[in-house]
Every structure is written in C-alpha cells, then in structure tokens.
Image (tube, rainbow, N blue to C red; front, side, top):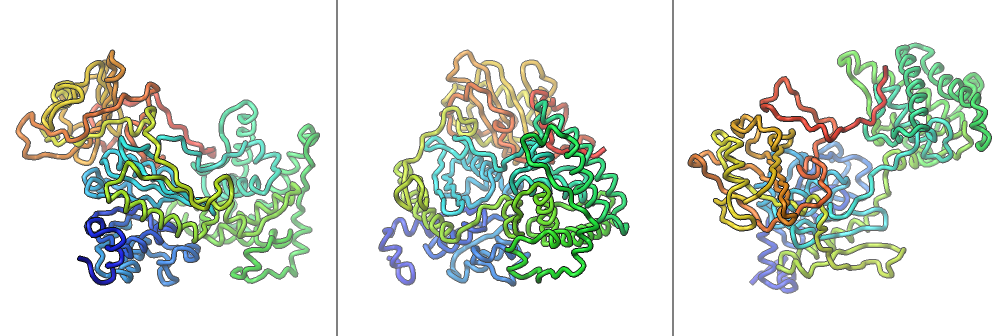
Length: 606
C-alpha cells in the first residue's frame, strides 16, 4: 500500500500500475520545450528510473518556455541542468543525464533494449528517424511527439503492432526557392532573407554555400543558367574578400551587391516586362545621411522588434560587416581553414543578415522586416507556445500509463489543434497499422551473438543466413533464407552473387564488430520470403567455434517490392559530411555501391 506523496496516484492508477511506473526504465530523448515539461511530469507522476539524452546547451532564447532553466544555466548542458532541477521536485527519482548525441555508438541495441518505454521530445526529423529505427529493432514502444505553434501531436509506434514513424512520408524540413527568384526577381521578404543568409553570408565568411541550403540547385535549363551566373557573382565576391580588413572593404562590398549587381539585372531588359525594376542604392548619398544617425540600444525592444529604416540598415550593414570580418581574420590567423557559420542566436550575424536582407528588399520594393522577424524566418522557427508543450507533455504521460498497463492495442494517437478542422482542442484517433511498404518496420531485426575474431563471412552465410527453416527455429538456428543473398554493412557491399572477394575474411577484418550491423536481403522465387534482415552484432568471446545465438522475432514481413534505398535498409543516419578515411581504414575489400550517389548542394568557389 503506497503512502505519502504518491498515495493519490496509487489510488487513481491502481497499486499494480503505480508499482510498474516506479520500476519502469524510461528513456527521454530531448530536453527542450517538450522535454522540460515532460521530465517534470514524469518525476511528479512517480516514474523512478529515467534517462535523458540531449546534446544541446541552454541559450537565452530558451528561457521563456523551458522553465527548468534559469539565467545562470546559459551555455550549460540541457540534459544535466534538467536533471538537477527535476530532482528538486522528487529527490528520490533515479535520473541519469547524458550530454551527448543519440547517434553515438554506445547508445546501441542492447542499451535501447534495456528500456521499457522511449519518449521522443526532439525537434528534427533525422534524429526522430534514428530513434524510431532503434526502437523498432529493439521492439520497445516509442511515444513520438511534437508541437508547432498551437498544433501538437502524441503518437504510439510499436514494432508489428502499430505504424512506425517512417510508415508515412514526412514533409521536407526546409522549403527551397528557385535560384532565379533568389538571384534576380525576389518578390517576398523571405527571398531576400534566404539570399542574405544562404548566399551572401556564406560567400563572405565561408567558402561555399551551406549544405542545408534553401536555394534550389536542381539543374533545369533555366535553373542551370542562373546557377552559372550565381557562381560568377560568388567568384567576384570571393575575389573581393581578399581585400577584407582594408579601409574600403565595406564600400567595395556594398557597391558590388547593391549597385553593380543591380545594374547588371537592370541591363536585362526582358526581365522587367513583367516585374517592377529594382532601384540602385548610392553609397555616397547614404553615407552622407547616416552621419547624424541615432541607433537605438541594441538590447532594447525597439531595436529588435521595429523594422529599421534605410539609413539604419546601411549603418548596421557596414558595422556588422566590419566586426564579422575582424572575427574571421582573427580566426584565420591561427587556422587557415577557419570560416564563420550563420547562427540565429549570434547578435552580430543576425544584424548582418537582417540589414543585408532589408537593403535588398528596399532595392526590389519589398517590405522590410524587424530583426525579431528575420530571426524567426532565417532560423526556420515556428514560434513555440509553452501551453502547447505542456498539453503535449501531459498527453505523453497519459499514454505512457496506458502502455505500461499492457493496453497497447487500445492506445490512441492524440492531436492538439486550436481552431482548424477539428472541433475540439484534443482529438483522439486509433493507431494506424504498419505500412507494408515501409522500409523500416518491414525489416526483421535480430541480435547476433558471435565471435567476430574467428567467424568468417562464409560462416555467417552458411550457418546464420541460409541454414534453418524460414520463419521457425530456436536462437541457435539460422534464418533459412533462399535465393540470391546480398550482405552489406554501414560502409558498403560485402557480398552478393557477383562479389565474393570477402568470403573467407573474418568479420573483424571486415569491420563487422560489436555495435555494428549487417543488412541482408534475398531474392527468392517466393515473394513472401523475399525479406530484409538487419543483424545487430554482439561480441561473444567465449563462443565455441561455429556457435552463434540469433535473438529476434522470426515472423519477418515481406520487404517492399520497390527496393528501399541503402540508407533506409541500413538505417544509417550519419551526418552528410561523414567520410571514411581509407588510408586508416581496417576494412578489407568492401565494394563501393555505384547505384547511389550523394550530391552536395554546395556551390564551390574557384
């Protein structure tokens, strides 16, 4: 019988469920807007074993809605501070915090399997997909959540029971804009902001356009022409950058982008038959009018939330250009490859982008924006509302109670919508069945315990993959896959019918060691037995030669007929700039895949 602070919870939930809540191991990924509310709810509801992962640090802009943090916590780890503050609500809770990325290798399959429930409180699709894949593979229930202004959702994802996060297509996280619009015919404030942030800032303070670019680089005939011309402009600015630090640098940059480039556009007479002609900005005239200019306190609301006039934008553009140039030159003195990257929370960078975007907007007769507005638009920010976060965090805990009570099949997804199509603030919908075409939850996931030091790839094929009866067997029986077998790891192809160079090589020599995985597909005459399997490797040093253990659900669904991309099959979510240093690689004869080519969206400077 529970007494004390949790007696009411025990009475409401029932003693058995309350005891389950106290002992359940819960993972919370993300300690931001939803995460702060959720961690507070968890400790107050009696959850006794919680682990929190977040790589981020606390910023001033977080304090208006992430109430576990205070001014003195700025620049500190979100996960660590959230833990310290939450323990003040319930000192007896066992909370473990990791200031780390959820992609790190020690957050492996065994670690995910140790939890009874995983809760996502993330703000990006890539990390959500990674956690989703690991939860599907570990067969652990995942509660996914998110908010956007007055909208929010809480959903359950469980392997073979309900859809996973990847069962339905997701919208791209960024809208992209045609190069011709950004370069030649902007018509909205966002076009000028994208130009200032993704083109001008990166050309002046880096060497390429950023990889997560919002400028469409697809090579249609018209776009290809504009990309070529954009590269010419970029090269001219890059040449001009060599004079950075000189007295006339600010004037030269201003005249290049607001006089010479505008004049070049004006010379394209056909362009202005359907568009209003832009206006050239005169440096000398603006310089004369800015002599007596009074700039408000940069920390005041007036400075931040009121659109600056032409002369204010002019002066702030020159001053921020000068200060950013000095910052870059100082970095280059110790690191020749140094560059600056736009950060919406960096005052100087934000001043530069705001003033440059507004000056371009004035040229093209477009309304200017305040620094506050530019920060939201340049940072792709949908304003976060603390009340929505609180509602969603509460719904997560309610769903967690139902999951821990064993009522998985009767759980529902919850949507928060203020206004719009739904008539109520909260709406419930039944969970959706798994999508048979999903390249994540149709995969068969297994943990393979094996001695990678002594086991060859041929041993794996013969004993683990091919032997046994399909869909049946104990942990010591193989999968019974027939037909043409293909095996890959995170690096590339290890084996198929036309590539058997690695057949006698040990797994260890191929880089297949603990905390890595093998991805296997087969091409059988029976479509129902064409499957995709992922084997998560666990080192078994004491294994007798030829022994292995294969743990997992042998009820493997047929893989989608449209063959999933390698990334989907492997579940690999490394950052795009991950590379393999072949000079130091221990992998042997891993065949590169030439079917998939990743193209960078950068514009390189000659």
